[in-house]
Image (cartoon, rainbow, N blue to C red):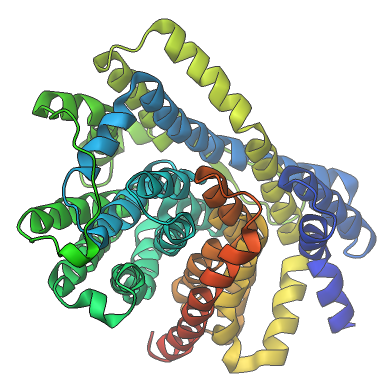
Length: 508
């Protein structure tokens, strides 16, 4: 019976895998199917009433709408508006003018700028934009995609202003800063490793590190240390953004003092010089996001406390032991990002037509993502309240016992591979990891964090990520060729993650 409940409990997720991989359905349709499967099973096997299933789904929908979907729309809107005003073109020119050394340019564009784009917007922008920039500078298309896929995995748990981690923390009633700190500690070897791998790929082996080993090391260290600090004192929202910005500044500063190696020289086109005022104007929306999110965080306690009063707490689920939802109407990242986009757009002299048309285009662009998030969160709530999650966790632990931490990152990897989303992976498997921690009497933050650790490996081999990368460099149809290049790195990552998971669980 335990095995039967395990399989039935997994059915919504198994359906998602089947619909995406075998039926080739778009994610939003597959996710809607998963929601329906979870409701039918909850009613027929776990004896949930229809009204309980409906209110559980509604709780998931409301959690998806605020704050997740508003952040998604706001982040992508900020990026799209920057495209309309030409600010993103200025940023691209600024970055590509630093050095002619292919290894250094790969660090700056794929790692630093890619991390910044993932932290700010996510949803493929951190792969598509850097990959197209690298190809424009003379990189071979599949190599450009490979570099950006490897660079994009590690920042994903903190992408889109920390939404994957914030969602996971809210779903399981965990403390944001503690979960963020643990996740960063778990990811730290990979934050240091990624720049090394990027340089080795461009340099065709260890010889590529010969004269740039220091800048490569510092590119990782200067990313990791600020992320650790921000995670601990502010939370997930700005952890990767600030880490990427500091890494960008440090890497550019060292690059300007590093003589390019002729063996790796690219013919970087010279453009018009960019003034400080033009650069500041182009970065204006992102500067405002920094200011608003930092000044309203717990670092500025009086402001944070004052804004906390503008919130509503509601109970939606009609069954036993319901959770509660808290809606922060002002102090939520989506509101501040929208305000930053508007102020930045005004500085960039965006027209009213650009503001409105970009918003309409962004909502249309993100419609399928919105439906996906509604269905995935609704499904997760139904599975959690009905007892399906408990059945999955109980069987998994009975089979693996104290070795369960080894497989924990694999669940995060699987969820991201299937859905292409770190947020969705956390929603699907976060409760399983939490239940496992309680049963094994392990540190719940460590165990839940392992799901996000696996996300970093799953993201780089997700079919969605690969398709986005190839389309950005006009190489559609070469999915298998790119997958064969990136999968050895993903396998290496997930094996190392399993070792870290098991060893760390013994000491934390």
